[in-house]
Length: 102
Image (tube, rainbow, N blue to C red; front, side):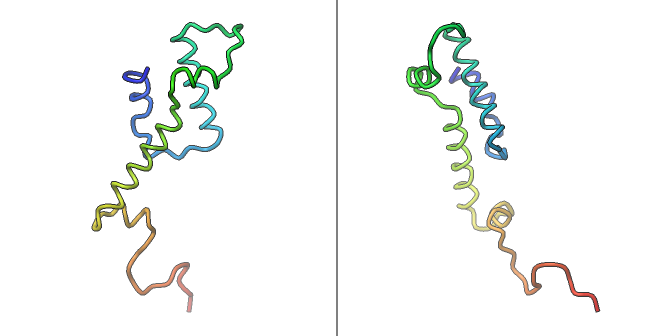
């Protein structure tokens, strides 16, 4: 799981915009994979927390770490276009908004 499934699933996760619904779907996928791999039937009274504690893995946490590492990589380069986009700083004298009509 940790060497094949998660890296393939998390490919490009640095650029994802994950809403609450999407985060739940990611957690559901992880639990489905763990239950299939460990052969735990749905009739067994195992909680999600107990399975994750046993495996010491959380895909949402790994996704967040990747996003933060990517942000640190972008912020370290002073002259990159990505840094300007993320920070939202644009040099110039023109004010924000629509130009006035005369």
